[in-house]
Amino acid sequence: MEDGQLNAYALKELEERTAESRLCYATAYGGGEFEVMYGHVNFPIRLATRSCAYGKWQICGIPCKHALRVIYDQRMNPHDYISPWFKAAAYKLTYAEHIHPMADPTQWPDFGLPTIQPPIIKRPAGRPAKKKKRGANEPKKGKRNTNVKCGKCREFGHNSRTCKSGETNVTGPSTSKRGCSRSKYIKGGTKHKEEVKDSCLVTSEHFL
Image (cartoon, rainbow, N blue to C red; front, side, top):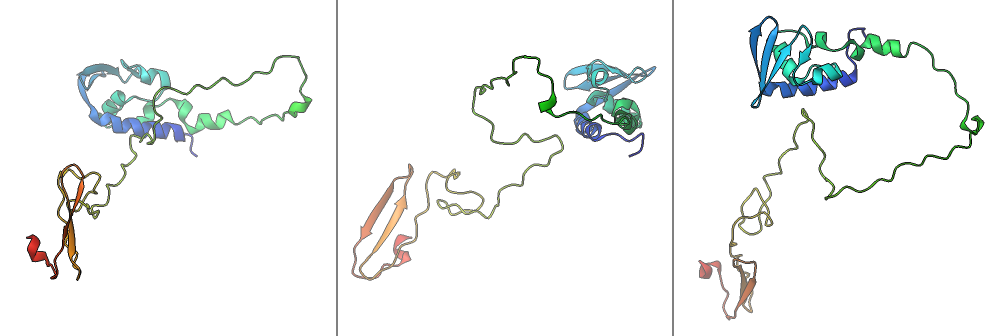
């Protein structure tokens, strides 16, 4: 890892904020000052002091989406405006010293202090979420297979539960020597059977 390379956290944050910066619009006012509009709110930005009226850039050390819009419009490298604490040189310096060994907890001195228990976790109100929160650059799931055939209207692209048709098609007649029966669904989902008792064989032409 080179000294100027960003760590994994900074790269992830930069990628997410870059995607959000596409909805921002920057205007140059001269003297290194810019104004970025996001929605209906304007944010003054100064690249020289690395400050934005939003305040996120000054707190975390990584340019916010408003500052990134200005940086990209000015054809600059956003890595130059990220705090050096997120770069490989600071990461290596953090672990430059060795870690001292520690004794086993059974060898620790007893001071007679009470044992601290973990806090009681209360279940929040509302139904827990079942779906995972998708990230800014995470692709959406593919659409459902369009080859699904509805059992009511006999059309493709949906099933009988999501069918918007109030009435279903009449199923084909069943032929038999003793007679034949046909079933028809009417609006409301009630099934009626009409028994057609006939000595002759009934064909589909009788139901057209």
